[in-house]
Length: 207
Image 1 (spheres, one colour):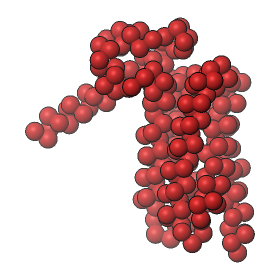
Image 2 (cartoon, helix red, strand yellow):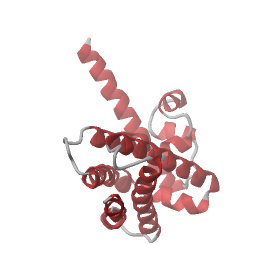
Image 3 (spheres, helix red, strand yellow):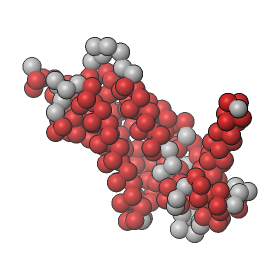
Image 4 (cartoon, one colour):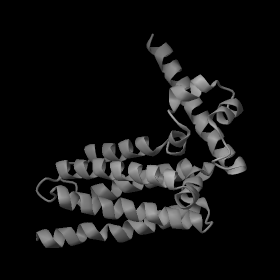
């Protein structure tokens, strides 16, 4: 029974990944607006019903790995070593998200598509910004809970917003400039290093 459930879950995850990869390809070949749910389902050799079992809308495919990426950061924070420095934990969480982006969204072109749509589509832009803000808020709350003596709600929101915002902005600019996946990853890491100085400044203020 357990083996059967495991097989079903693997099949489900494979179908989800196929839909994401197919959507990324079609978005880049035909354009985002010209690609519909039916097109993605047909190219992935599944029914529209199967598509909707995985994604409520086409926009959800565009942002498909975002929630899992936030969960990855939360897991890093939750599994931190005892007495681990705040800066070190936040850096580890952010770099885990960057590494995940570099292994998925950058190679298949989904990240580049999002960067382009941030300029071309106000609707998609709003959806992306809402997703980023929601993710930042969850990470900030996790950091505040992990370091209650150093962070209140305001400082946690400020520090996490500075780091995550810097990484996202660097990725968008790099991809809009046509840089490849390796350069975009480097840009995100560089932005994280710059923004993490906000944590150092917070430590100075506390002292």
